[in-house]
Amino acid sequence: MKTLSNAGIGATVKVVKLSGEGAVRRRIMDMGITKGTEIYVRKVAPLGDPIEVTVRGYELTIRKADAGMIEVE
Image 1: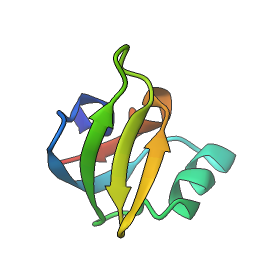
Image 2: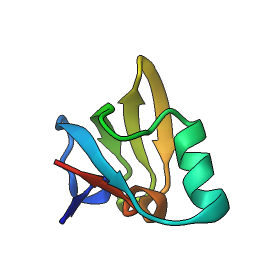
Image 3: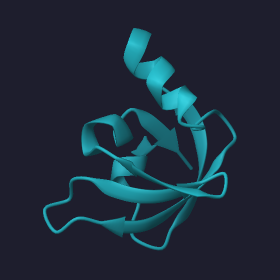
Image 4: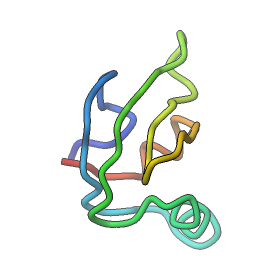
């Protein structure tokens, strides 16, 4: 299982599944990250947290813990 937190800088990945439940899952979906969405990894902070990505044409910074809930291919 590959997650968004494991994707390298410059990678374009596609969302396969969202894990997590309740408010956390809803917040991720409200940011535009849904099944089938393509995500481009722009930057990763020096210590690995947070991760800056491009989703649906806008930049988004997401915590590594939340990125670990997003299964990608």
